[in-house]
Length: 139
Image (cartoon, rainbow, N blue to C red):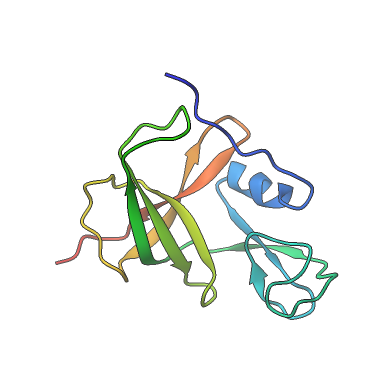
C-alpha cells in the first residue's frame, strides 16, 4: 500500500504544524481583534486587517460535531477506507471549525452536537495531524 500523503508546512502555517508535531493545537490569533483564525490567511477573516501580525496560541481542542461524512472511496493513495471525517466547532471560539478523522471509526453512531476531544495521528516523526475521538457514548 502507498504511504499516506503528509502536509507540507509553508511560511504562514509552520507554527500550526510545529504544534501538532508535539500534540498541541496552536492557532493564529489576530493581534488587532484577538479572534482565532484557522487556517491563517494574510488577511484576518474577522476584522479584515491586512497585517494581522498573528500571535500563535495553544488552545484546547475540544468541541462539538457539526457534521460528518464517511469516506468510502479514496482518491489519493495511502488512505485506508472507509473512515469518518468530522467537522468540529471548537469550544474555544464560536464558529471556529476544524476537520479531522474520527478515531472511533466509520461505524460510530454520530449525532450533530456530540462532544469530541482532540487527538493526533502521527504520520512521520515530525508531522502529526489533528483527529478527534468521541468524549463519551450517549446513553
